[in-house]
Image 1 (cartoon, helix red, strand yellow):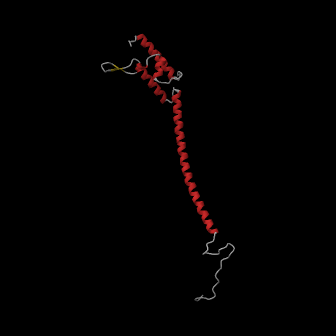
Image 2: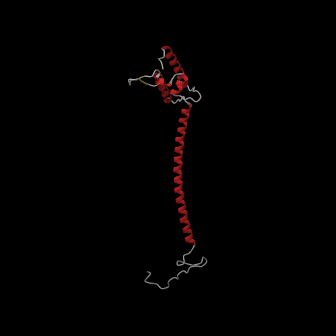
Length: 168
């Protein structure tokens, strides 16, 4: 690939700036995102121009449009910090993440409530069972303690007629 003339480079930089402004306003092409790949495609330049280059001797030099790519990334980060997201898909992802976090919190609350209600149910059932056993115990007479049939009366001991000791 050959060198680009200064006129061609200036024209490409102007196209990149115009595409950058469109993308950051949220004017995305169908299937595009607010990223360097879409920026390069919208400006009609090769996307590798936004990244550093390695020479044959191993030294690294800045890509021809890397300063514009860095500026694009900084402006996009500033928009995000301000609460604006130019890419509707990114905004949707953020909304869905927030909604998922809310649903997880609600689910945890419901799980805790279900645990509490299950423990309450277990306690209530055990108390009802104990009360039922007590009622059944009181309704059914024990053979050694009193009458064997509900209509039968227990004998009451007679009063004593002999006095032991003095009353007086």
